[in-house]
Image 1 (cartoon, helix red, strand yellow):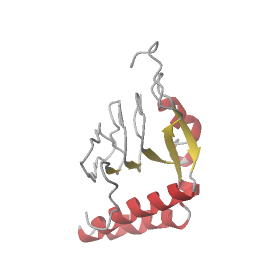
Image 2 (cartoon, helix red, strand yellow):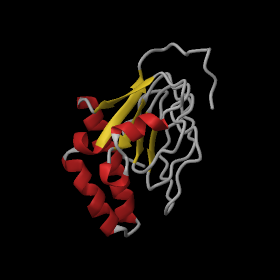
Image 3 (cartoon, rainbow, N blue to C red):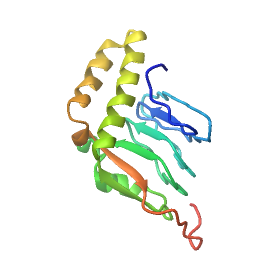
Image 4 (cartoon, rainbow, N blue to C red):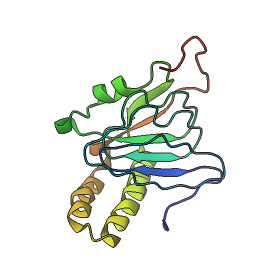
Length: 163
């Protein structure tokens, strides 16, 4: 996808729809993935061991997310009408995840606008105008519609294993 900012040695990932997938971002790879499914959700461990990059999730990220996450940012759709509240996001975090769910900061707003705009362009290219218009409304106030997850420290609690 053209138009996305690429940070050296990091990845930008877009997860769309009600489905997410286990996506590993490794150094020197730039990825934008649109994972679409009607009513599925990730089966677990999305963003496990994420070290850099950005990810945008438009649906339910599934259980046990961000286990071992030490870098980067994940932007989750805040959508209370569909049960995607901050409390629900926190329940989806892996038990040993050393991350925090927070409101977007200025960089977060910029990242969400960039990633979501790229996805909207792809939808328009695929003649999915109705969906593009629905998502375009989220660009008006990203801080209302998204939350960010980022590591709180570089330390991993060795006393807690992954689920």
